[in-house]
Image (cartoon, rainbow, N blue to C red; front, side, top):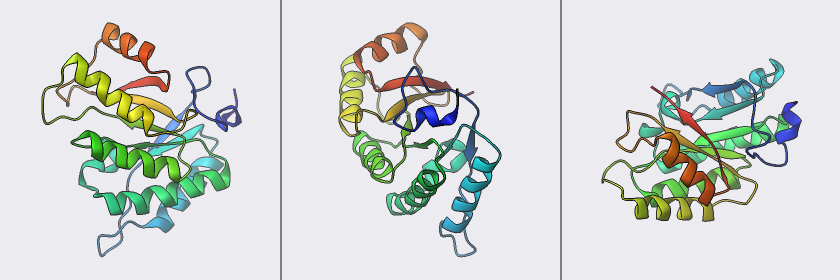
Amino acid sequence: MAREEMADGQTRENLHGIWIALTTPFTGDNRIDTGVVRENVRRCHAAGLHGAYTTDSDGEFYAIELDDFRTLVEAFGDECQRVGMPSQAGVTWLNTQGTVDRLRIAADSGVMGAHVGHPVFMPMTPASFDRFWEDVSDAVPDDFGLIQYNTPRQPHVLGGAEYRALAEKFPKLVGAKYVQ
């Protein structure tokens, strides 16, 4: 499969390939270096990678406030669209609204999918998982792929059966990323 097959959206059927995690470049005065963001996207595309993502744990998502997230993801999404490279962004935050805000910015910036970790501050019940994924799913277009960021560094790690049940309820949930 070629990366072009993901051009109209990311689904369980077409999400594939070798993706690269882009770290977040900063200027000397601690601002997002959008020129380097764009250059990195162009280089990854030229290397033939299937897609790129930013703002996960290797992209310092936990240290990027909303305005800087917007600056980074707008440049990233725009450049990925310009070169035709499938894209995803990490949108994990401490609460549902912060996650939804980041999802909307990503979708509005042309990013095609997102890695979503559960809020970590309070324990989540099965009902709160459902509500969280309803809010997350409602925040993005139908062709926007959601990847559940499942890491033991967070207190809400899902097992196979739990993930399967969640994926059956929420069709935009196209995969899980397990990170140790």
